[in-house]
Image 1 (cartoon, helix red, strand yellow):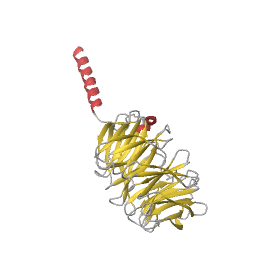
Image 2 (cartoon, rainbow, N blue to C red):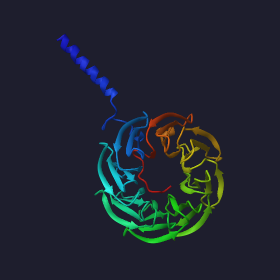
Image 3 (cartoon, helix red, strand yellow):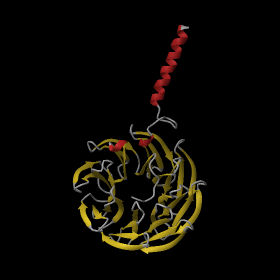
Image 4 (tube, rainbow, N blue to C red):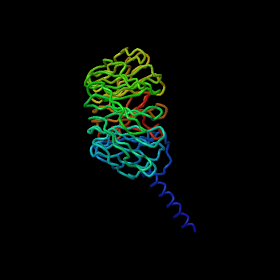
Length: 375
């Protein structure tokens, strides 16, 4: 009897040891608000990471050169847009399994979802098309000619119209979602690239990379109402939380232009760094962090003064996408050339962990709102 009891205790202890040694598996309880999905272009994988523990839960093989992860409305799937093989990979967020591959146009790069959660619009950058995905059937329901180098979409709050930039002609195509027909093409400037719609859907801001300008489109008239000189390599645009300012990355000039959204005047230029890209406001609203594609640091800026207060060294490799977790205590950053994912303690503004990865790129947090291209 005593011998049997010792044997049972030994088995339980061994089981506990091995359970604690194994990586997390599907179904393990974690804080969903800190689960991150990160695409790795260099290894053709999707990493699922427990942000609180700085731990990779799963690594899922997907298509070639997965650019970004995209959370599908309803929370069941995450898509990756595989610009190296013209497909979308569909991954089940609960089982961590690849459940389907959807063929779309050449080099799918960005997408938005309709407010009713029924469709996704995917811009195909090495094509002249935008693919429409039926999210119930997980298949292409329409292919729309939007212009050469179709790149960035944004959707109106009512879901009635999708605006897609087209690089080669330098225009924005306006899609009526009830017919999936282009109803207008609005000329903006050389290499129309990044697009961002105001939260109310009244204006679309377009970064024209070659022209170095920002075009502002009135969506009621589908007409350009302002053209603003931003800087060389104008690309991504983000608005301040109150919507009063637009922050525009000028990749070649190495700065971010701050534009008053009421007057369309540049009120500041922040010397962020080479490859100046996307703007990220800390949840507390006091500081701003910027991704820089070609600079080995992340600048931290005072939101009131637009002055750089810190530059966080990250080692080799620029950054592309950033994401805050745990109320903004930690910042995750992908690194294009450093072969790691960075974890930054924002209270110290210091890198505290580097998770191995190969050409990491896009980030999404579980439970976040699906992409609309607004705000």
